[in-house]
Image 1: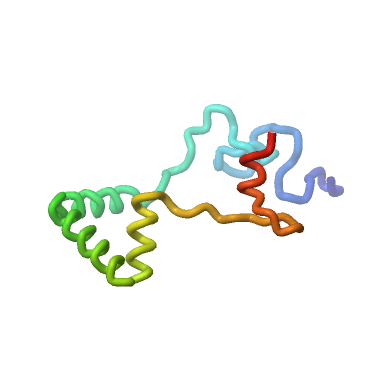
Image 2: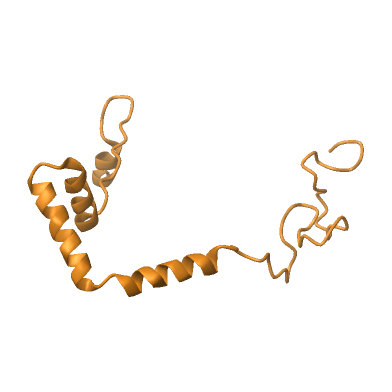
Length: 113
């Protein structure tokens, strides 16, 4: 704590409501009980409207045609199309992490008892 009673991060440590504004936070930085929060994401309504427009514009047949084109490109050797098709069908590959001795931790942890 500094000489002014604060702990250096702009908040006191006593848990009392902040008198410096109506930001809903206690002096320790936590939200006060009963605080309803902020306005949320201001772009949420706009994004929702865009998603709705896409859903209305794209049919199941459109999606099937796109997927068939991506599969055809993947079969022709397009590695980006192949990765996208496989990621969508099988899920993205796990990142393998190795320990200092070069052992795969993902595999090692899965088989340790």
